Length: 266
Image (cartoon, rainbow, N blue to C red; front, top):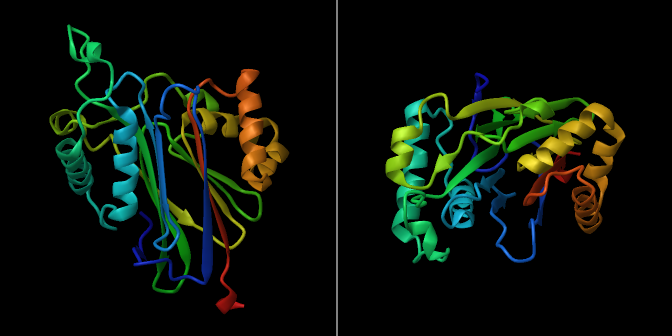
């Protein structure tokens, strides 16, 4: 994290944020396996992408994003602190998980599924002692942040190019024992940066993120149209792009955060 930044109770710079969530399930039968949550008041936003092979992964994805928005890791969290935060979320999830709702064959035989898994991205808006606004983020796997500044500069985290996406991203296990055994200091990535009025922050699960990265490379105007499009129009456009193979056939979640000047600062 950039030196000098601290966590506020709420964003203190003369900026306001507004957020919207767009979610599109891969089909009309199964529950969407992504999670998304926002707190404009506290400047916290998160998305998670449940791995389809897991048990009730939509519940684990939702647990992760809700925990981050409710009470994220401390601002100067060490690797051990981050690991303990994820463990605390997994313990609470395991203790409150309802009776399994998936098919019974998942619990049987050598291929039995014992945990849910998900990628995760959490973002916090922050400001420093001089009132300069910024963001910090943590990520596990390939749910990605794209920051498009008012000047048109693009910053991405944790991936930077479409070809970096794979079928085997890092995942956060929902079972405490599995999480304790698998999460090391390399699992959680961190980044931070400045923000200003007119910037847009896009938090996207992998299929949407890969498509946005491709637009950034080959159709920057298309990326800006995505940012400006009304939610219903964008949902229809994403569905059409998925139908023609331009977007992977997967659950699609895009959380858009816009930053603008607060009226009191004008």
